[in-house]
Image 1: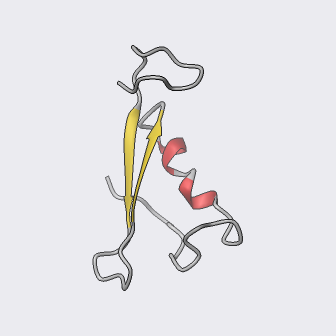
Image 2 (image 1 turned 180 degrees about the horizontal axis):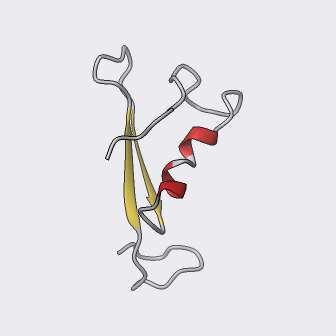
Length: 67
C-alpha cells in the first residue's frame, strides 16, 4: 500500500520493483520504483529508456529479467 499516489486510492495495491546492476559493476546501482502490477509490461518500462535521456547511460540495456 502506497499512500498519496496521484489518481489512486490509499487502499489500491502497488508493487515495488527493484532493479540492480550486476554484482561486479564498477559503480553498483539499485533503482526502486512503484508500479500498479507485477506483470512483464511493468518491468519492460526500464528497458525503453533512451540512453540520451537516461541518468545511467553507462548501464547496459536489460535484455532479460530473472524471476
